[in-house]
Length: 353
Image 1 (cartoon, one colour):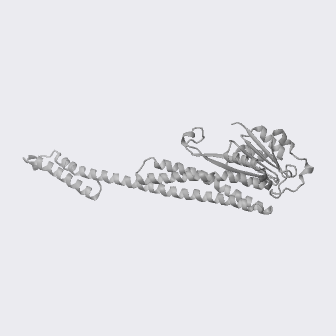
Image 2: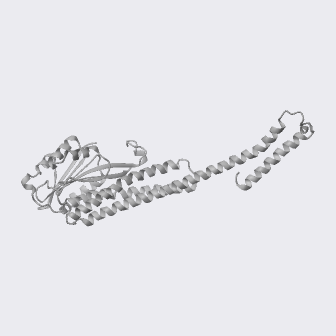
Image 3: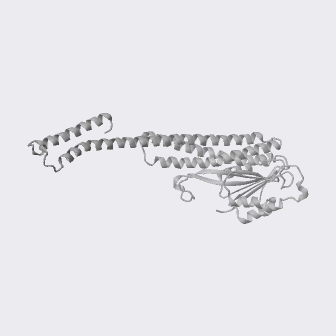
């Protein structure tokens, strides 16, 4: 994966937006004397790392070791934060390091079956990308391993409308998370369609491989639930932090919280539907097995009586008068056929055959 660095610096004074390279990025770092200004639109208690009236968005795709060193130097990051970013923990969380917030959330993408060969798990339709985010009062840094469509769309929109960055770092964080979470809903719609297909297959005819498909989809929903639940907690913390900062972006983070609630509720609903479908499938499998056992039992009983008669007259005793009867063979054979036909007719009436 090729490394891609995108740095946008917005100046609120002249409302200009310009892209920066790595060298220019380091030049935007103010000296300590310039860090005492109050930044509007950020979270209270965090420390500025840009000049007055500036807002920086730094987005790094497939970061390398040199990028981590640059970040640590440019934003005075704690070494443990850098280690957390490198480790790719996997669970959404928010840590408050006083001068900045460290947030982990995830982007989800549906992968068609014919494109899953390059994934770690070829059977999973989900591609999960961790996003590490650092938020200060005048900057937002995002890091991820692969290009993401939500980030590209947001980057394009902000280049076309630079005045959007005038709202500050908290609003930029909202926009980033909102773009990512919005991509969850088309994915959930696809999974909903798959559940409908499973239900149709379930009640049309019994299929042996359906349970494997249901379990695969349940596993997929469990992965989403493990991400969406903690992400909701992260947004809830952001709501409280925004309230401590004056609540200027309360409506935006409340919107994010509603999104995460909807995602969690949809996943739980789909899991319940799949559990019901799986129970119905297992009940159908049990009924089918019972029907097979009835048929086998009926056939066993039908064959048991002639076998019993043949076994009795196959014993080598001298005193068996029927063996010397002129019509004995035909009488016994006729009895076997009559009993077998009678039992067959009886079991057919009961629906066992």
